[in-house]
Image 1 (cartoon, helix red, strand yellow):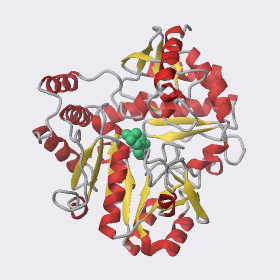
Image 2 (cartoon, helix red, strand yellow):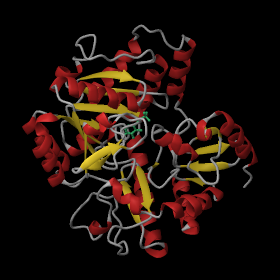
Image 3 (cartoon, helix red, strand yellow):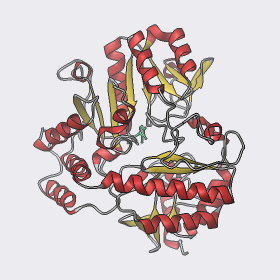
Image 4 (tube, helix red, strand yellow):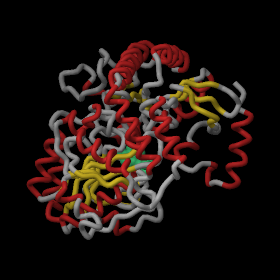
Length: 446
Ligand SMILES: *Cc1c(COP(=O)(O)O)cnc(C)c1O
C-alpha cells in the first residue's frame, strides 16, 4: 500500500501544526497518520487513493457513517446557502431542543454549545454555582474533554494536574475515584460530602475502556448525590444517542441525572456540545439566571440542522437495530477469534461500539463470548477478566497495539482506533461484508 501523499502531507503539517495535527490522538498511528481525502459509507479513502473500512467514524459522531441521507444533506446545504449563522436565534434551534427534551428522560431544557469540552466546562460551572460548592468527583480513566477541572489525576491520598498548565488549585477541587467501586465513592463523600458540587461520570467509560457499569452503580451514585445535596452529571458525549437509542444511556440504566452533557452525535458530524437537565438548574444559566454562559457559534443553524435530521433519521429508520446488530456480530466474531489466536486478550463493548483490549485482568483465557457486550455480570465466566475500570487498560500491550497490530490492520485496509484507549464505532454505513472482512483481518494481524 502506497502512503506517499499522506507522508508528504504529514511532513508539511509538522512544520506548521504542533505534532502535525489539530487534536493529539490523530498523531498516534505509526509511523505517521494517513490523511483522509473523503468518506464513503462505512469507508474512507486516503490522499493516496487507498480505501479502508473505517471503524473510527470521526471518534463517535458519525452514527450514520460518511454518507448522509438525502434529507440530511439537503437540510445542511439549504442552511448553509441561507447564510451559515446569524448571532440571533432561529427556528431550527428550537426544533432540535424540542426533539432532545422529548426523547431524553433527564432533559427538560437544553443549552447548545460547540464542543463536548465546552459542555462539561459549563456543567461544572453550573453545578458549582447552584450548590455553592467547589469540588467535582470524577472517575479515574474517564474523559470529559480538554478542561481544567477534569485534567486531574490521583486518588483519595492526593491529586495533581495531569497536564502542565493546569493550576494546582483545580486539582485540589477534583476528587478522582475508581469507576465501578461503590465503597470508594462512599468514602469520597464521607470525607468531602459538604464540599462536593457534583459527580461527573460517563455512564459507560468509553475513552479508556469500554467499561460497562456494574449493576446498580449509577443508582448508588444517584443516592449519594441526593443524600449530600450534590448534582449527578452524566457525561453522555459518547453514549448519548448511541447507548440506549434515542433515550440515551440514562434510559438504559434507568437513572435520572440532574445534568447531562452531550456532543458528538447530536451535531450530526458538525462541531457541537450541549448541557441538558432539570429546568430548575438549566434556567440558572444567563440570561434567565446569573451563571454566565455564552458562545458566538452556539446553536449554529448548520449544526442544528445536521444534528436534528440525524436524530430524526434514527427515529424513522432501523438505525439502532442495524448498528447494534453489527456490533454484536463483531464482538461475537472477535470472541471466537481471540479464543484461538490470543486467549489472553479481552473483547469489550456494547450496543454499537467494540474493542479488543490487549490484556486480561485475571490473566486467564477468555471463556464464552458475551453476546451483547460486557454487562459486568458476576455470573459470567469472563467476569474476573474483564476491565472493571478504564485504568485497567493501562496494563494492556499498548506498544504491540500501536507498532504491530494497528499497522498490520491498516495494510489490510482496516482502520481501527488510533490508540489502544479509544473505542471503535459501528455506523449505519457499515455492512455485514465489512464485518466479515474486518474479522478476517483480525485473524491475520493477531
Ligand atoms: C469526546 C468527549 C468529550 C469532549 O468532547 P469534544 O467535542 O472533543 O470537546 C467529553 N466527554 C466525553 C465522554 C467524550 O467522549
